[in-house]
Every structure is written in structure tokens, then in C-alpha cells.
Image 1: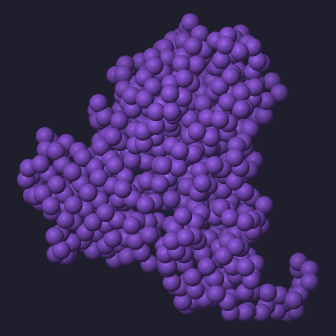
Image 2: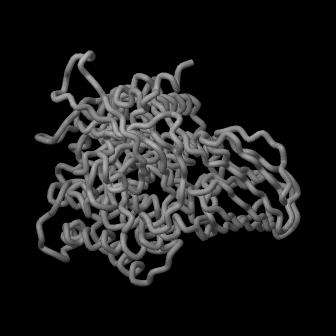
Image 3: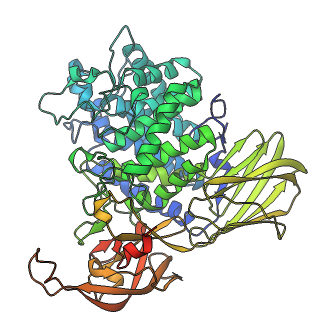
Length: 637
């Protein structure tokens, strides 16, 4: 059995099949060290925090091991489950006897806290008469879903298999309780839909798929109004995506960003099993609306602090951006599933953008602190924290990084697909032929990718290479000879030939420094540009520009810019340096007559760093969007 994040091996409406994580070995200098940090620093310190904050003791309490009262918030169980999932995935790539032991100890503690009917939730242990009464806010099925996902990771990785039987008993319980003859309701926080479909894929028990469909089809009917928790924070039906069935949604609702993205992820999973065309049409509509009007340049989603929600079209403030780390993780999850369903490169583009920017910013370079909120501008007060009372984001970014090897490659009936360019070795079996690919690249710093193809026997198949949406002048060579193929942005170029051991394919994707601009209705970015290079979005941070407030830096479209790799900065990054201007005004007060307003421009040099790396040094102002002095001359038609 393979070790898959999302197992579409038998999904009738998925174009792509996954490659086992165990068959992928990272050899790069960007992601491989992050896996080392994850296994050596992040997961052990996170476990200590789970203990210190009582989250694991809550399970010991249910089984009678401790007499402490319940500690924390009603959804705290899910933090433990996500840590388990992250650890199980990480152990596929990095061995650790100590972490394996701790993981199994925690799994045993959880298994012992399961009630005879399969129910498990440490908050409602003292309130069993109230279970499922407050689904609008209780997160009971949300927590159950995360347990199921953790259990699948445990089983597939063989790191902690006991949890799988716990998850099956819980899933059986959910299916027995939630149906047309039982409780007709959904959870206020979607998540279990993803878990139930994956549990169906793992077990082939159709009850779990049917339950996922039940959950999906009963959302949007206003059922949650009958399940309010007295005194709990509440919002509109639209916030819970319970105002209209997903198949009828014409646009993205003003909903909690993570809930929306988990729901669309689960709906995509359901589509790949059922082929429901109405569901797919809705997913396509929602994806277009989200990515074209409500997503940040970093791939972040969620513009409002109120309710951690998505805003109106083009409502994308910078310093007040919410852009929750969990929403970035969920955006990667959804786009990966859309990619598996279609093989369409536009989904891989968003997956890559979000991964390298909005998601990766959520964890510090030393692996010890986290962002919950990811603004695109700051005066310096916003800093990563070692933990949060609501601690969903730390284990969420951990499980994404831990599972990264599973996102790189896929297979179809006719060939192999490379989605993300990471130096690595991968072994697959394609139609009975064992094939090794050796990928060598310095991505994301350099756009040259070399792939050595080693089939066990000469064979004809197609190697699909993604041409990112940011690349407009790529070249492809085979064994040193340029092929003259048209490489269009946001597509896969398929090279079909008889491959022999040692054949080398080279893809050259020039990484040019570019200015990104916003739609005119994004008022926060009027006359501003963001600097991009390859998959990375850049920002100005005060510590790199000590003689000027970075909020006063402006550019011209003709400014000379250069990219340069700095090995001893931020674990090694390509910086962008060049000419700029300090813009200042001597006028006092916020408002004045245009006739009296005067600006002065002082030529300066500036440095920009990748957005994901900001706030790892001393505090200071930061900004992604930079004024462009000659903006209207640069963009006029």
C-alpha cells in the first residue's frame, strides 16, 4: 500500500493518481532542511505545549488517568489530532525513535478515551446529554474529522496504526447518528467531509462516502439555526455557509475562510468519487470568483478580522489582512484536489503560490513560533508567537510541511506528472515498468530544472512538466537539444517518447523580476506594485533598509533591479536590490489643499526579501505593496 495524502488511485472521476510519499526523497536545500527542523524542533516543542496547556491531559481525564478538570476551549482536541497527523507524515521522511514512541503514547491515550458507542470528545465528556445539541458552535464533527485524518496518516505511514480502529468506530458512530432517520444536521465548521471521503478510500466502506454526501447535501438549508449554543459567539447563516446549498452558490459567500475552503476541499473529494456535474460546476464557479477577486497576491484568503472571514470582491486590505495560516493550508489542500481531478496547471499555480508565500510565512525559520494572521503590511508590532489559545495554525502548517513530498508528483495512465519543482528522487511503477526520476534544481531561487529519467526498461510514456503561470519564455531540452516546443504559461508540456536510462530533460524557466499590479477596485493598492520573482512574492522589511521608513519607499518602472543570492541571510535567500526613492512631505496634518501639497524624492538603494521570511529578525515596519511613482504612465493602454 502506498502512503498518500489524498488517495485517488481508485477514484473514477480523478484524472491523476498520487505517488507514495515513501517513494519520494527530497535532496534540496530549501525544503529538506525544513523537514529536519520539523522533526527535531517543531514537533517536539509542539508536543510539550500540548502537554503544558492540558490538551493531552483532557484525554487522560476521560480515561481516569488524571483527576484534573477540563482545560481550554471546546475544540482543543483537534490540535492534538493535527499534531498526530503531522508527526505521522513527518516520520515517513525522517526517522525518530523518540518521536515515534511519544506519538504512540499519545495515540494510546486517545484510544483509551473513546466511549463504548464510539463517541470521543473531551469537552463533552461531562456533558453527554448535550452532545450534538450545539452543532453550530460545538465543533464536534470538526474534531471527529481531524481524528479520522490523523488515523489515516497513522495507518498509511504505519507509524501509529492503533488509531485507525478508533477512527472506524467513531465514523460508524457518526454514520449511525447523522442520517435521514436520525439527526439531520451538519457541523458549524466543515472538515469531516474531507475525512469521511478519505476514510472511504482507505476502507472501501461506502457508508463513509454516503455520510460525506449527507453532510454536503444538508449544508445550506439553514439546519444549524436549531443548534445554537447559548451565550456562544454567533454569526449569519452565510458565515457558516448554511444559507444556500453549495451547488446553488454563484459566488463566494462572506464566510469564515477556513470553513469555506475545507468545505470546497471535501466537495471536490466527493466529486472525484461521484462525478456529480452540478457540484463540479459550482466548484469551478467558486474557484474563479475566489482567485480572481478575493485572494491576496500571496495566495492568502480572508480579509476580515471579524469572523476570520472572506470579504466582498476586491476587499483586500494590507495591514488589516487576516489571511489566516489555516486558510493558506486549506487553499493548498483545495487546489491540490482540483488538480487531481483535472490535471489543470492553473490549480497547481495557486497551490505553489500559496505554499511558498501565505502558508510558509506561518512558521518561523527556527520552527518555534507561528503567525495566526498574515498581514501584507505592518508597523512592526505583528510578531510570531510560540502558541495561541486557539492553536489551530501551528499543527496545521506542520502537517502541510510534513506531507510536502506527497504533493510533488502524480501519475496518469499515460505518464508521470511533476507539479512542484523540488530537488528529489522519485520511484514509481508505471504500467509495470519501474521508473526513477532524479530531479536537480535550485528552485525557487533558480528556474533551471534537470530531470534524469531511468526506466528499468526502455518504454514509451509521457513526462508532464508544469510551465508556471509566471513564466513566459521557457525552453525545453532533451539530452542537450532544444525541442522548439511552445511552452505556454499555466499548462503542462507533455513530452512523449521512448525513454532510455540516463535520458535528461532540462526545463529552463527564466525568473525575471516583475511588478504585479492590482485590479483598480483594490483601493489599498492604488498606484502600487508588488515585487515578484518566480513563485515568490517579496516585501520590504525595515531591518534591510535602515536609513528610511519602508512605508516611504517608492519605485519607478524604470528602476534598475537585481536579484542576488545571500547565503548567510535568513537561511539563504535571493534578495532583490536596486534603485528607489524616499518620498517625504513637510506638510503637517493629514489633509491639505492639493495646491499646497509638495513631495520630495530622495534617491536611495533598497533591498527586498521573500515575504515568507519576514519577522524573523528585529521588529520593524514591513510592506508588500510599494508606490510606483509613474504608475499611470506604466499601465496606460
